[in-house]
Length: 160
Length: 289
Ligand SMILES: Cc1cc2nc3c(=O)[nH]c(=O)nc-3n(C[C@H](O)[C@H](O)[C@H](O)COP(=O)(O)OP(=O)(O)OC[C@H]3O[C@@H](n4cnc5c(N)ncnc54)[C@H](O)[C@@H]3O)c2cc1C
Ligand code: FES
Ligand code: FES
Image (cartoon, rainbow over all chains, first blue to last red; front, side, top):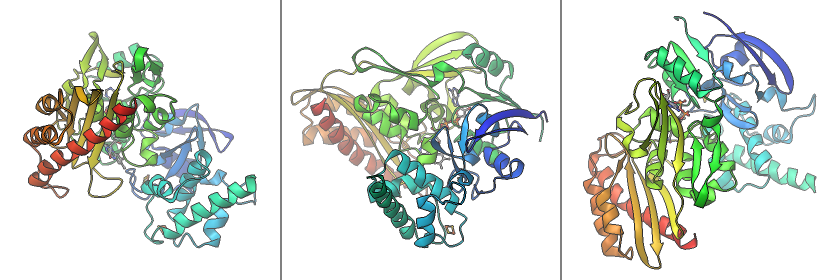
């Protein structure tokens, strides 16, 4: 199959790769670029484990072709911490045990960050609806929702 | 896997030419939230994928005179949500599009993909029909325009001819004291397929309803408009008797499937209930507009 040459930006860094025309962004990230933070839970858009942002908008990497990233900006969980400094959401998830096996965690973190970037003061209902496309088989969700609410409150305080 | 091609043309002419030349082997890619799922399962095996998101006309949002809009067929729900005025003027059409899937799915899902995928339960389609939207279509034989309700032809089928691409949706001017709304019934609160979807548009003159459009989803092989329900609302004060007549017309318009989400009797009964609830929201919006 003729490969497609893609020039894109991933976590702020220019990136080039070759991919198959029908290859998903998730497969390209994981298998070609060594970015295995985004997980494949379902490959059909239902679980959110593959969440990334495309030009700042939250999307499922499993429902996007790698070729579509040409000329666009992708962010993945690998771009969330700044060096050794975890993002406040990452710290809070660890502190409040908002994860168990961790498979869903990169997706929840990317999705939660996209929410707080847009709305620093969401209600619990808004958080629950925003994260409805992220499934977790372990935590029962409550700790995750509380971690997002608590982080939002702390980030608002820090911003004052 | 056989050879497959990915094209992302920058003009509509190029897209139509490539799409038509591939003679049925090609699929249009908008947000991919239906197409990629179908490719993953092996249900769709396109020889060519024509990504239409680099074509400016399919990605544009233009406000026209009197609250009308032209919305590109591939504009995502997330993009339309961020538009400063669309959701204020057409909240029902916007909520119908953004009931689709999760935040992630809304980041990509488009009116064009929802309509052209041909699901009887497509959420945005009753919203578009209630809004009175038309769709501009371009194909090898030029351009034409269809009312949105004339596009679905059955589950997975549309009246688009081979090689035709949906370009944009035209929302008419929005008369004073008008409002639209969309409600759906699903067994869960999020991430499910409609058991019934109901779109309503109303224009009021004081207490009297002077214009109405009603569309139902998920209760027949295609989304359908319900002229008898519209007739019952027009000229009324949206009183209980008129609402019950309109609800009965909605129940009569139902020819649903029987599945795990809802029996025939349940879907039919819910269609009447949703009509009343959706009218109430549209009327409240009309009063404020
Ligand atoms: C997890 C999940 C949840 C979902 N929930 C819902 C839901 O609640 N309600 C609902 O209605 N749908 C739902 N869907 C289905 C889907 O998201 C919608 O139908 C969406 O609107 C499709 O839009 P798209 O832009 O992604 O289409 P695509 O997948 O790009 O295209 C869909 C089909 O239309 C064709 N097409 C696309 N654009 C054009 C065009 N401009 N001209 C001609 N043909 C075109 C494509 O070839 C394809 O056959 C869900 C999907 C997922 C994965
Ligand atoms: S792997 Fe993409 S949503 Fe589940
Ligand atoms: S922590 Fe295991 S799936 Fe969420």
